Length: 244
Length: 42
Length: 222
Image 1 (cartoon, rainbow over the protein chains, first blue to last red):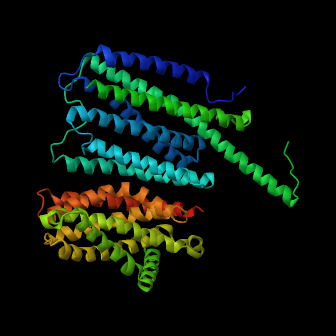
Image 2: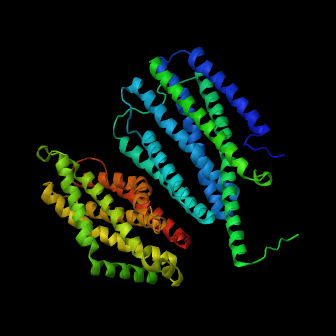
Image 3: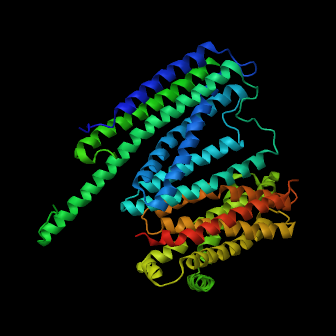
C-alpha cells in the first residue's frame, strides 16, 4: 500500500543516520576539537562550509548527468533526478556562499573576496537559478525537459571556463582564499571528513524526497492532461473504448 | 568569534530543516492528489 | 550548411539595413551607457581612462542582449519560426547565420564605442592587433552564446527578462577575458593579453560547436 507521503523505510533509516551523524559532528566540531592555531574558533565554520560545498558540487554534477541522460535516453527518471538535484543543489549553493561569508568576516575581515572559488560559486548559483526558472516555465513536459536539459549542459560547459578565467585573473593578486591555510590532521581532519559524509547523506535524503515530489508533480500534470483530453473527446462525441 | 560560529551553524541548520519540512509537506499534499498506483517511481 | 548560413545572415542583415534598429536604437543605447558611466564615475580623476576596458565591454554586453533579443524577435513574428523550421534549411546553418549577423552588428557597435571611448574618456588606443583580435574572438563567443539562449528564450512571453538572467552569467568569462586583454593592449597592465585571447577563443569554439550541434533541437520546440 503506497502511502500518501514521500517517506519510506529507506528514507527513514537514512534520515535517522543523518540526524545521528549531525549530532556527532556537532559535538566534535563545537566542543571536542580545539580552536585552530591560526584562525581560532572561526575555523569551526569550515566543518560546515566544506561539506555543504561538496554536496553542492555533487548536486551540480547530478543535474548535468541527469540532463545528458534525458537528452540521450529520454529517461524520465534521469530528468527527474536532474531537477531535484538542481533544486537541492541550489539550496546548498546558497548555504556555501553564506557560510563562506560568515567564515570570511572574522578570519579575513571581509565578507567577500573575489577569489576563484567564491566567484565561481556565485555564478553557479545564478546558473542553477536560471535552470530552475526555465524549468518552471509553462510548457509541454517534453519541451520543458529538453529546454532545461540544454540549459544545464550550457551551464556545465561554462563552469570550468569561469573557474579558469577567474583563478587566472585573481592569481595575479594576493587575495585571501577560502581554504584551510594550516595543514589539518588528526581529529580536525576526521571531523571534516565525517562532516562531508553526513552532508552527502543529508543531500541524498533531500534528493530522494524532492525526487518523489517532482515525480508526483509530473503525475498530477499528466493526469490533468489526460482528463482534459478525455473531456475534449466526450464533447466531440467520441466514445472512450478502454483496452482490456 | 563564537558569535559568527553560532550564526553560521544556526543558519545552516534552520535553512536545511525548513527546506526539508517544505519538501515533506509538499510531498504529502501532492500524494493525496495522485492515485496510489502512480505515486512512486517503483 | 555555410550556404544556408549566408542566406540567413544576409536576410537578417538586410532586415537590419532596412529597419536600422541597430543604428538607430542599439548604438545610441551603447553610447548612452558610456555616458552614464561618466556620470556615475568621476571624469576628472582618470578613473574613466583606467576603467575604459571594463566599461567598454560592459556596454557591449548590454548591447549584445538587445541585439540578440532583436535577432530572435524577428523570428517570433508571423510564425517565422515555423517557417524557418520547415524551410529545409540546415539548422546548424541557421545558427551560424543568425550568430554571424549578430556578430557583425556587434562588431559595428564595437567600432562606434571605440570611437566613443576615445572621445568621451580621452583614452588613447594602442596595441591595435591585440584590440582587434580580442574584439573578433570575444564577439564570436558572445554572438554564439547569445544565439543559443536567444532561440531558447524566443517565443516565450518572459524572454526580455529571461535572456539577461541566462546569458550574462555564462558570458562573464568573456567580459573578464576581453577586459584583461584590452587592458594589456592599452598598456594598463603587464599581463599577457594574448593568453586571454586564447581563453576567449576557447570559449568561442565551445559555444559555436554547441550551437552547431544543438541549435536544431532547440529550434524544434513549440
